[in-house]
Length: 206
Ligand SMILES: Cc1cc2nc3c(=O)[nH]c(=O)nc-3n(C[C@H](O)[C@H](O)[C@H](O)COP(=O)(O)O)c2cc1C
Image (cartoon, rainbow, N blue to C red; front, side, top):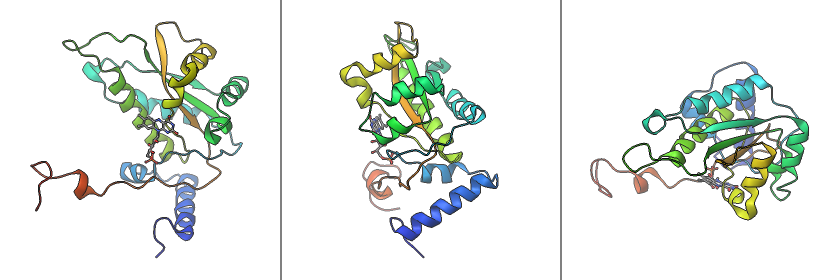
């Protein structure tokens, strides 16, 4: 049996994923969690149907949020001219510069408190984004969570302007989406026993 990381394993993984999508099998949530990965390679020129984009963003809309305030909103970019303009902003990142669509996750620039003195917009945006990542994976597409680059050199505001965001809103995360042209895998994770324990932090035993 080929092991993860080997070329044969990646081949089998690709065939299984493609056949699941083609034959309409639904990927269960644990499979989607295992297959999800940050994809920074090139996308094919296959366009994404709006039906899929709606389904993906609906997954984000259904995520939990602090006090159910549902503070994240989304701009789905699939207009070719707009896609092209965003592509040009990040030429070094293959996923960003070959994406067929983008999902822009938008929050308040100055979020108000919703519980005591606390606001949860970053957390709300993160739960929505993770749901979106899993939905993207389940439908056979790929993406990567782009955050750091948005904060550099006013990229968030440059894209925000293209998307006609009001002044009080800011682009927090952008997800370039498409059909992956290359096979990538999820990065290695620290083993369970080094990150999780039953009952006591860092405890040994059962
Ligand atoms: C809060 C956050 C910010 C991230 N920002 C970026 C980013 O700006 N650019 C990028 O290429 N990946 C970004 N990522 C993706 C991580 O680099 C990636 O999740 C990590 O390396 C683990 O790889 P995996 O997603 O394949 O498991 C970000 C992820 C998170 C959760």
